[in-house]
Image (cartoon, rainbow, N blue to C red; front, side, top):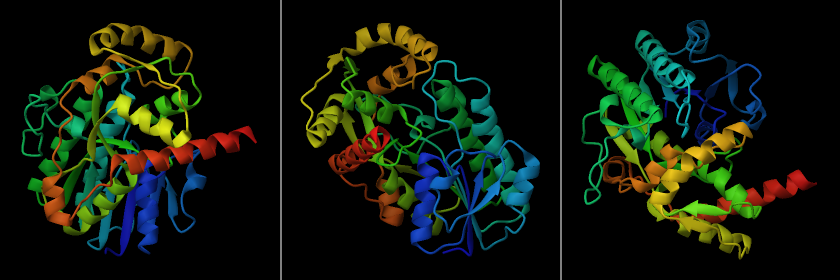
Length: 335
């Protein structure tokens, strides 16, 4: 364990899980949070919060004021988007923010830096191949703005590691689980499903992993991950149809949406995205999300399992806990 941990993006779905796991391990945690962050109250009371923004250099100077070789930095801050046009903020945070955090890490000679990238940063292989971390990282090798931003940031971290920074990278797959207050893509889909307002879903699937397993994997990587190495933190491949069946089983729902063929879904996705944006609804059915469900979702976490005993739980357990949490949240909202 390090003397202190600096966590960016600490009020996000994954960042909060990391902070909670650190508190359970009785670590000293400092969290960088945006001013007026609506989720700051969800952090454990033991976490020391520092107001700041990865896009503002002066606030990072304050955040890193006491950082030294006994400090571990866990960089979770980032924007996740399946939008066709996510906007310039995506690159400002995912790339510019990572560059600023790296600069502070090197200036303060921190003991360890763990960057949370994404499997989307890894170039896709044909569907008969298992995807590993052993590849070249470049925005030109991946599709979509989100993937390109994470690939660019990943390059920056590997470059810093070559210059001497003790940095490791983790590549989570699709993160799901209880506690997703902000509402990621599948969480938004599951909410609509539980309300009986999901008329259709999409055939296809992907690799999904429990947020709690990713948080634990990140901390284990901070202790045992090798400098300049990347580790996929994947879970299990599962179809959207199967996921909704498992959610329905836990919630005792007989409702079953129609699963559209991928070809039809690709045609319908642009319209549905425009409709969701117009009505200001969460995005989960977009051309990018459909492309992901049609892509190769076979990832190997063998490197993480070998290096720091990473073992994700069964997806049915994650969906059971996630559904119970969603039903409890709904009950609270109705009170």
